[in-house]
Length: 79
Image (cartoon, rainbow, N blue to C red; front, side, top):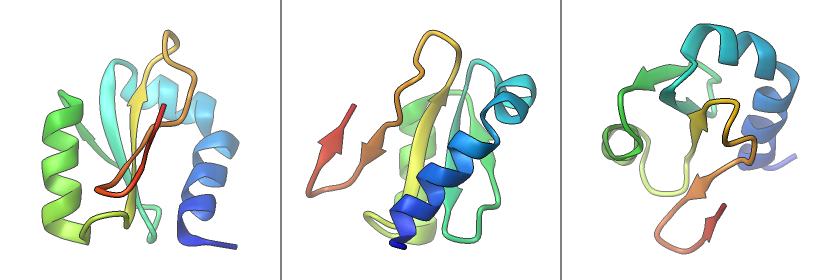
């Protein structure tokens, strides 16, 4: 399983728990699966790149209005 797939699966498995805890926040999920929350996607992105490097973390808008996973990296953007 790829790193990003592990992170996507973690979010899917823990979605309700994450929504309950981080609703309205942007969350960063690295390979260690230690979730960190931010007030904006931009803040989360800057933290993720600085801390884990490009393409090594999942950045997600944690809200009911946006159920799709967002992967941001310098190579691809999937929304």
